[in-house]
Image (cartoon, rainbow, N blue to C red; front, side):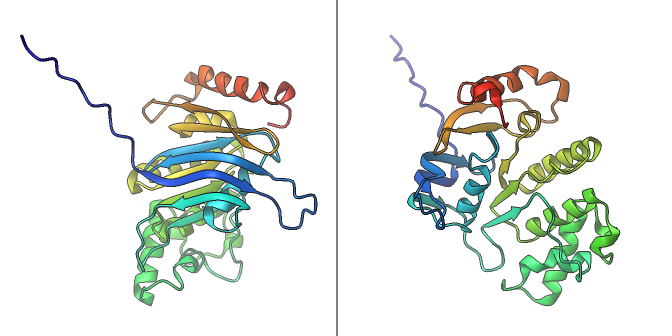
Length: 265
């Protein structure tokens, strides 16, 4: 009689970030009230994780803590990046591009490379490569004022990509753009993500955007905020925008269970 073969469960994906018991309170808040508390989250290396939740719940605060720009009041943040003197472990893309108007486009992109162990020639090469990656190689010598809003956001993305981060943190980067530009940049971001293999943590208030981009959506809720729901989207890219109604409805239900009528989403 043949001995049945027992299959081992699939190995868990390698992590890029581990958050355990994370808590954060604003230092100047004399009430001592936590914005985040008891937050546990593991981000897989190479994954695209979106974070959604109501306005003011602490989504951007979470990004700042992961980026090392804010110190947690309790818990542990472990960024498991591979240290190298010529790159940065994480890069943050803001809602507005925050370009320096006195620097041309290429110099804006190269800003994050200053302080790394790179020659001036290598900094220029990396900046040009990042601009080419976001389709702006021909705009390298322009000034920020000469660019459209969508182009400025591409420059902000290129600046983050130039440092070759293991983790790309994005704080509602397309929310101020018109719908056509937003959809174009969403597709550009997916192309860049797949080409670079970077891990992405993407904050958005747009449930359709989260379902279109991410392979996992995390819902923050409560006061103080914690992870109240997770949705895995095991769907290949490119996705059809009109075919995600069921996934978006599931996210909205999760939000409405924690917030009256989904107000403030």
